[in-house]
Image 1 (cartoon, rainbow, N blue to C red):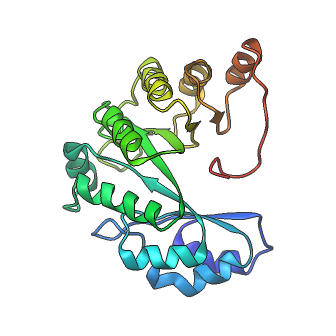
Image 2 (image 1 turned 30 degrees about the vertical axis):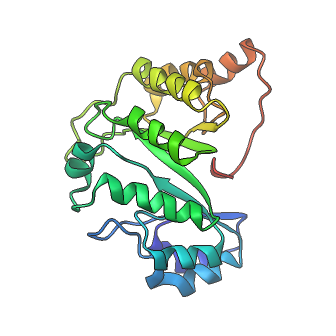
Length: 233
């Protein structure tokens, strides 16, 4: 849910959990402090998954109070940051935000978007390497969806086989981490091709898997468990 939808959620029946995200301001922040009272009210009704954007120490203090799961976009490839975000932030800002959140004792689930820079795979492995150094128990991978009206409207998502290579490499690099293939990835034929490859690459979970992924899991003897909430829960 975007911040603008919080008030509407408060007037509806309670849910088990709520996804809260931006957009971001010009500094790459989601305006958490500016909406703290609404977030407190929402927290009383269910668990929160907050996409925080880059955080300040003040944001972290509020998040400690709210005790959400923090979904944190994690990018360390400077050309991608410059091209995609355009807010003047650096890889160090993303790294420092992740350190702040973890040092506060929050459950932080980094998100790495494969193909973020116009569908090119650039810096995703560096992000995983950085997470290995910083500590990472859980990691969600996403895949670029070219969006109408954006600068990448005509871009192509990275080939499923190349995405699977990144997933396989991450599985080896972070052998103990829980790896998820998240909801943001192209659908249709792309998903039918990617999802079974992701199973064989060793991910622990897939959001809204294509039936081909279910069959692949059954073929290799995996135990399948179904959930009803966001993958970080």
